Structures are given as structure tokens and as C-alpha cells.
Length: 113
Length: 114
Image 1 (cartoon, each protein chain N blue to C red):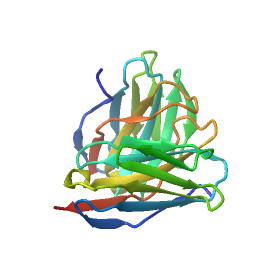
Image 2 (image 1 turned 180 degrees about the horizontal axis):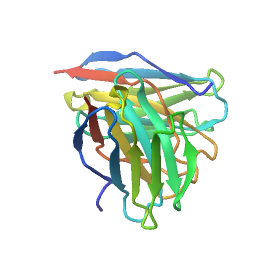
Image 3 (image 1 turned 120 degrees about the vertical axis):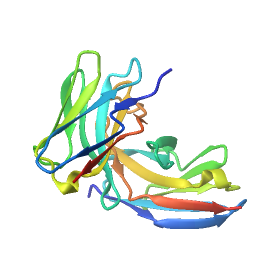
Image 4 (image 1 turned 60 degrees about the vertical axis):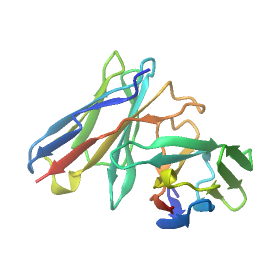
């Protein structure tokens, strides 16, 4: 019940295309869903986050779509750029769980010029 | 504003040894969490400290321990190292433990166990 399942494992997109990464969870006690971006040799960096009372959140080219009834959420990267090539992790946190995030397995995104 | 600082960045140990990793959180951040990152298991939560007290613990053996000092700096220790402990150990800090808090990660300490 603590798992967060992420797909696909890897993704290749052409420059200017849309990258879509999906995550699913089971624990209905999760109330915070962040996405992190990680470049080689760096720690994960927060990209965008959403709470379950909102169905969509957009920040620049990045959008989270959240489907509470299906217990799924996804990251859409519009107009993907080579500089977006990185590993993306979805995560979830339960109420009052502080710094404890449950991460998905990660998606390695490659944007081809 | 300085980010989360982890030392050392790289280290090599042999089986049976112990290791101590250090984390300096962002100034003003009082919560520090530790994660283990491996290709096979991904990012896994180790433990969280707030106000020098462990607030949360992941599913790791007792060989993994940590502590937090009064200035919020944190250390984690792994005793009796095993080959499987080879990983990137990440520290993340946040202002507090509230639902609004954002975790900021350091670059990690890469441990290789031979």
C-alpha cells in the first residue's frame, strides 16, 4: 500500500514534443504529490507538486494532472527541450509524514534535437 | 543562500567497516531526512530528524543510524558495511514538518563498498 508505481522506465521524445510520465498509488492517506528532476551527479530537485483537492497544476511548460478517483497522477512536459533530458521521479507523502516521501522508480527522459 | 551540503561526496570502504556521512541543511531549516538511492531499489527513505529527535524511520536494519545536532546539522552512520550498502546517500532539508514543507536535496555522498 506504500508503493508508488511509475511508468515508463525510459522515454525518448523529439524536441518540441510532449513528454508524459504516469504514476499510480494505492494509499488514500497520501496528500502531497511532488515531482522531482534529477541530473547526473546531482540530487533530485523539486519541479512541481500538487495536492489531491486540485485536478491540475501548471508551471511554465510543466503540468501535473491528478485523478483522485483513479489514484493516478501524471507529469506533462510541453515543448520538450534537450535540456529537459534527466531522470524524473514522482513521489507521494502521507499526512503528518514530514520528510518521508515514497518515490516512484523513476523515468529516464531523453529529448532528441 | 547556500543549499544542502553533504560531505564527503565520494568515499570507498571495505566490507565490515563503518562510515559516517554529514549533512548541513539550508540555513533555518530544522528538518533533515536521509535517503538511499540505488539503481535497483530507487530512492528509499531512511529516517528523518527534527529538533534533534528521530521523527520517522524507514525499513532499514539497525546498522543504519543517524543523529541531529542542535544546529540542525545531521550525520548518518552505517556500521558493518555490506556490498549492498553501495549507494548514493542523499540528505534533504526542509523548514519544518508541516504539510506545506518542501524537501530540498543535497548532491549526495556516493559510497562504494568493496
